Image 1 (cartoon, rainbow, N blue to C red):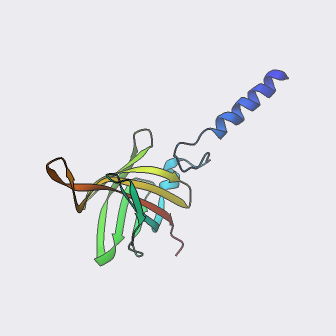
Image 2: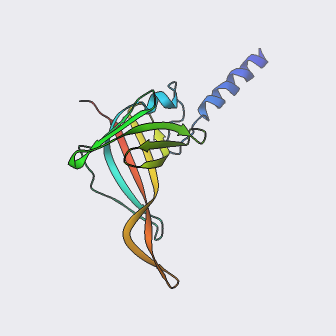
Image 3: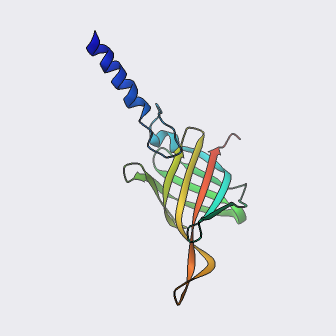
Length: 153
């Protein structure tokens, strides 16, 4: 009887500590691929500026849609009729998503992945801003954080 209780307690603790992403969820019955496979829209867009440690909310395209098919097909539609088509896959032990389209190749870092909420960072995006490092002037790198929600249209 004592061994059964210990086994049940151990299983519960293992389930509680299953969280992979820093912003959650801690546990899900759906696979990561099943949670990603959806049509998403932007709820919030945050720009992080690593060189000075600041972040701020930014304007975003409210018409943008991100479509992740369960078979690995990816589509993006956005402002000015921009359409990107390609493929996606989970990489690095499901910490990242590699997206390869006719527009670009990106690696997203997943922060939160729920059935109706998906947050990620697109790191090292070159900005138009310059910073001075020693005697050199270089372009600043920004990290773009997207908070997406499920499209219910």
